[in-house]
Image 1 (cartoon, helix red, strand yellow):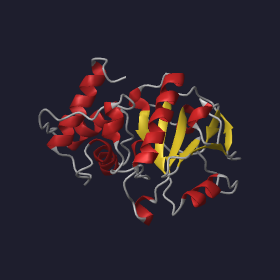
Image 2: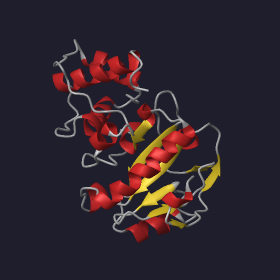
Image 3: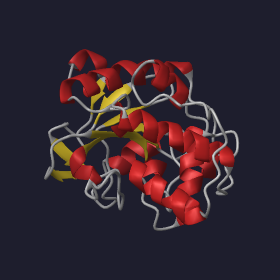
Image 4: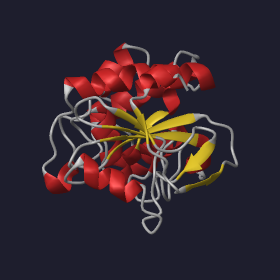
Amino acid sequence: MNRWLVNRFVQSPNWNERRRPISMVVLHYTGMKSAAEALERMCDPAAEVSAHYMIDEEGIVTSLVSEENRAWHAGRSYWRGESDVNSASIGIELVNPGHEWGYRPFPEAQMDALMPLLADILDRHDIPRANVVGHSDIAPARKQDPGELFDWARLGELGLALEIPAARMNLFYDNPGKFYLALERFGYDITEGRAAVAAFQRRWRPARIDGEIDGEIGGILFELLLERDIGRAR
């Protein structure tokens, strides 16, 4: 970790040893009324929750758990064959009240702090852009964060996540099962199909999130799989 990217260090007791090499970054929102509440919860042993970093709306970056250790941010989750996401990932919490307490856009100062921190993490750990994910991507039946107002497109343009492709065509699958299999092939847990579709929409087509399979998201998923198969979507 480059210490100049971090404004303060607050040690959370909520961590244990990793069992996997670091290969992912998971972005969250705190979903609480204030940064102080979120910080208190992530430092409360009884809560059994933490993250490696928290970034408040003013752009203050707090380190809570050393990257070499396993923070407890992902919960029951899955991505591309990995079910111990906590062991394989670095978790970043973005202060935002979330859908329960007044969800709002992420301020410029917060994004300006996130981008160099994320770039540094990806470079040091050689993390594929495809493994920069939201909590909703890895736990679609349980989570919505960081949500449809998070600027994934900006991260994609900067090479800090996969770019959001345009659907060059509407692609309608013969039946829902084929779409779900393609979604699973890309990386999602499809145990609860409608929730997985909504999570995909939230990330890749946030203008409409209804959990329904349509030609536009079929086309987007096709582009993502094509980019991966030809080696351009690491």
